[in-house]
Length: 186
Image 1 (cartoon, rainbow, N blue to C red):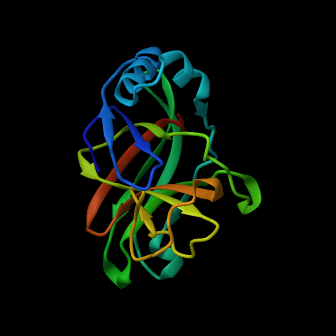
Image 2: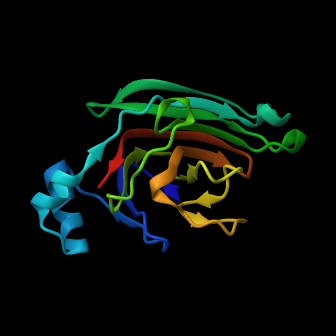
């Protein structure tokens, strides 16, 4: 997913990938726009939303011998609090990623998102491609759901067993710079 500037993205939690990028200012307009796309009453869509307050952590390929480097920081962007991932992705030593990720619940407990239609994320980037990844407690590898599409796994995405969410700069040499100011379920 390329991230050129401010974007509000929503990804349905269904087994099919349907990315619905929107460029709408304000939560009220965003809920109305998504409700129109989903044929849902806007009041119900807003009422059913759940904003997350993640405790992001930085992880890089150094955990497996790579040499990519980076950091995360909390800052204000255009009046909104955000967490920003910056760094240099290197393919040396079989590496190739930097990421910011968070657990939905402490202690690797699962989060049941089955009552929600999808994930909403507001982010800003530097016109590079980034991966968004979900993990459940049934998956042993972080790459099993890339942008919510199964990848090298036969396990289906069980939204009642979500464990972790990540934003990754991965797979090629480049300068990472992406910030997330909002993430939640709708």
